[in-house]
Image 1 (cartoon, rainbow, N blue to C red):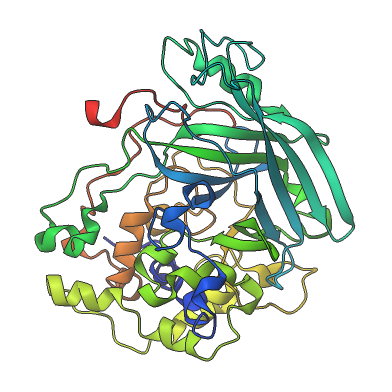
Image 2: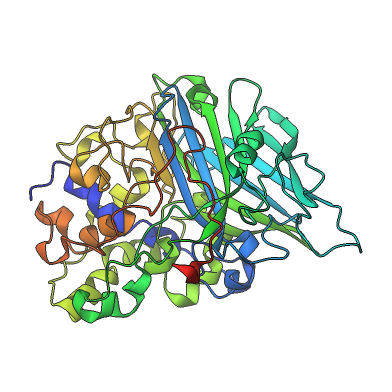
Length: 460
């Protein structure tokens, strides 16, 4: 199968975290923790602050807006009561946007949470009767949030009264959970919307990839490890002009997006989670650096010379060669530095020059190399999204931002195996992990992520 895109774009998919990871060599491991599905030792013990996935895409039903999403708390068992799940009241959760290419946040949306617990000493229950609204007296525990927008001009409180959609405790307790979801969506000043609450785990993959890459012979595939689990999600839908450089989407359509969590400590707030591109810490960052990854802000990614070495001589292709006999692409991979750190520019090849390079923002200054999820807001939603995104010629998909339905596992494996360099898909990996979509359909309106389940995972 011929690739209908720039082969260099695809290589960047599999290497999305290598540059940032390399620059951690001089950091102290205890200074931060990693994110994304329990792959790092420290954050595995702090799931409320574990950022599992970040998404950024032009809203399919409102193409003048962009949707930004960050998910937390991996592997929420739906029936895991009686306390169920909640955001950390000692942390600040943020989605950050760089719109001028200097790798520093120009717009930050920041959530903080507070508890309303009416159980006291009278009950152990989350709710003591059917809950039909977010203000139902039967709901004994709920969280509220304050959402702030931070820019160079100052800080603005968008809402101080947001209500978190509760954990779905079951059909007897919450017979119409869709009503609770709808009530939790907050309209923001200026035309935006916000959502905070429990949702279905939208990431889909067979995690037996960690058993010597699907059992060493591709026999361990086809099982969605995340089926039935929930997460806690933070989502925004905002006008494009609110995040574009100088509010000019026509001249400055590219943004960089990542999420962080700052947790309170005796020394003040400390960053314990950072996530931009998917699969960074899980399959690229060496074990010794995993706990340090998220202490590093993007603007420091390229400060250490070891950065280049990690990109030009990646580990995963060597594993594919050792286990499956798939010849690894020749090293050094000198093209990766330009592609990963800057996005796609005109000099990169025949693909459209405006895919996801921040240097194409007309009003931007000098580009600072950095790892983040880049989105070109000028590329409209496609009528027929392809799960392989750019790999299949769907320029609105990953790595041009990330949609809920983008199959980042299959895309990454193809890129690591060299599909981008040869211009053809690697036939031996054509089927990928045989998990091609989420077990639940996405919704047609914000926040798009499916409602949380209420059936025990072991009941499937």
